Length: 78
Image (cartoon, rainbow, N blue to C red; front, side):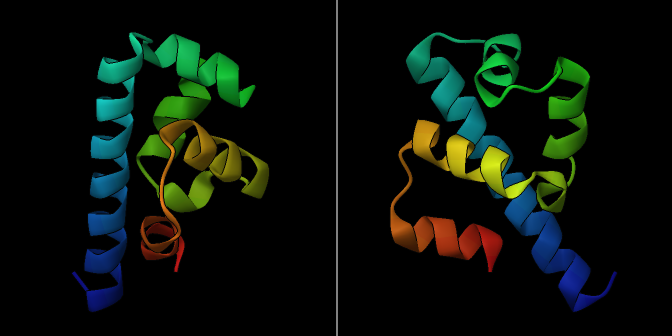
């Protein structure tokens, strides 16, 4: 695995953890999150495997829901 692939895998893993924490705190499930992002549940699962698959609108909505600080946002998308 290349360095770039490792970094991408780490970002995706971190995003999954942030989403899991959000779901626990909010009492929502992944279906609710998919609705909030205006995507299907299947799309959410697919996009959670690769952070780069989220559209700009979806990722900004997701970051807003997760209430991420700017540093964390940059870390995930840079």
